[in-house]
Image: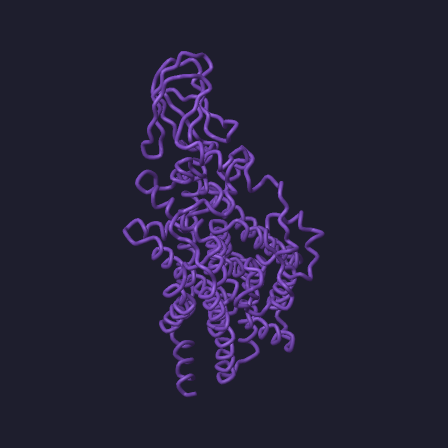
Length: 549
């Protein structure tokens, strides 16, 4: 017991030791990386192909809008619809010579590490309590659904969202309850969320709206808080505009698989059985339904129900978290409302909200209920034991599941960002050829991410269809003249030659003005924002030192 007590003191009282402790938690939560990971993953091929797409673009273009090597060279605009800025980390690691699997494993470890760090920072900032922060880092490190996203589901976008979600809660807490001038915390959190996973961003935006409604009176009586909430939203939009505006432009320019609304996701059949909401299950009957959110949350919920703590924030988090859990279950009548929530795909995505809120409120609750050192050591031990069940369950699940074929890279994830006109079987059989409505003479070659066509034409209304999937932003140039480019009936790039008798056409994705303008706005906004944050924090540190003196 003395050893445990000494270890507790070293962790709580020493900043360097706390950092080491967080790293150890990240290593433990990443245990399967060093053994069995990459055997299985719902979306693993999709994300590996994204990493490879970025890596292969480095020699041609640093920030591509089109992965030109996708679909046998037809190209795929994944970067315009799915943010990939954080995937530059494993892509660069792969680029310098490390194999893609090891690069991916390193990235998973970094996701675990920074998820734990941001949770620690957020709870410490909210509670002003190091013990609560340490407890939160333990719970979050081994949280069942977070680990499910990282490993069995290989849902990298959602896994990254777990890094920034704690900062979002910390930021809205400051704006509502404390120093609204720390709005920059919310900006960092929401910007990171947007650039990680759009669906998770939508879910947490609804959560923010709920917090604002609940605390509506406070915003009315202290209107400065409304001001800084609006400022946060505006700056977030500017910072992430380089992704948001081009995405919206593409969505308005064409009809795509993901937004045609022709298929209704059967949400009612994807709910979680009530008995499984908390308990980790090694092998669920339905592999698309993840394990429960974790046994540790049963314990935290019981503590909350048995003890009345007069803390509005804790109560709000617990209530919203439990409601989100209820909505994930088969107790909620999804069959009557599912057509209004197509975007969510799986009701158990709401585990995300439950995990984040119960981790934050539960750790603060434990710190308030148990103030004696002996009691705190006991609680930490209980939480470590209960939390570790999730890690063991996820690891065992990965060992017992089948293997994913990792020999190739495929489009994956339902081809959501293809124009509706595109038929994958058609372009597979079509091959790397150019067709024309007239019998003209031409040859073509691919140079980097460009297609160069030499032609001779004896007709007045000639056009050619290229082996490129059409997205707004493609351009075709002959000498200094741009030709008209549009989408063909097959969803491919169609270039109108007209009556031009001969020449050399260069076709490539030249981007739209929106892309260039929004990138410039985001660069200026990010630079200005971080200069502001640096100056503000420096002034605060200086004022605190003067107070101490």
